[in-house]
Image 1 (cartoon, rainbow over the protein chains, first blue to last red):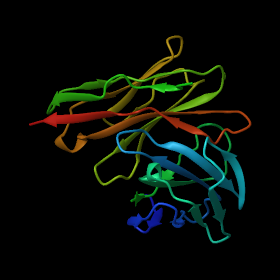
Image 2 (image 1 turned 90 degrees about the horizontal axis):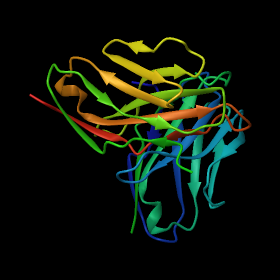
Image 3 (image 1 turned 135 degrees about the horizontal axis):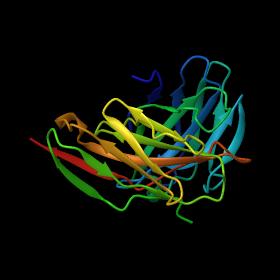
Length: 115
Length: 116
């Protein structure tokens, strides 16, 4: 176990609705990254938060937003849900960045279905 | 542009035999890291092995080894003595150092099935 937890495990939403996914990082990890993994594909980088500020973003529209809190928890918010947002959402926490070798510890993911 | 390429959608291996999962990557950075992750059906990504671009020796972690050929930009994962529990999706990933050195890019994955 990585010590990274995510909630909820599964979620079903309707197109146009808004959703909030939650992640609790390992204690001491001040960096959290979020990924979207569509069925049959590899994870795609959404964004990263470092010390409560966004610190890099992938090719995702502004309706994907996030928050990071001082207690090592974070949120991914998605507005105006679309059918293509159906995916497994993974968060990964890590120690302060240094060289490229720092390891990311992934949570079990939240499976979001948009109908 | 595709940064990580895994050309084997699925692979089969007999229990106790070795298997190689292919990965090629594309980068103009001199400093980067290469990772392999295992993803069982439960969904959690499990870190297996890491290779730095400046590492001269191939990385090894127990039954996992990484065949790093820098000039060819390949980073193949070798699993020795396959076990039934090795059946899973395997992803190759890369992180480049740069302004956004946090962006870990993943390949499409290889589904490994270990036969008894």
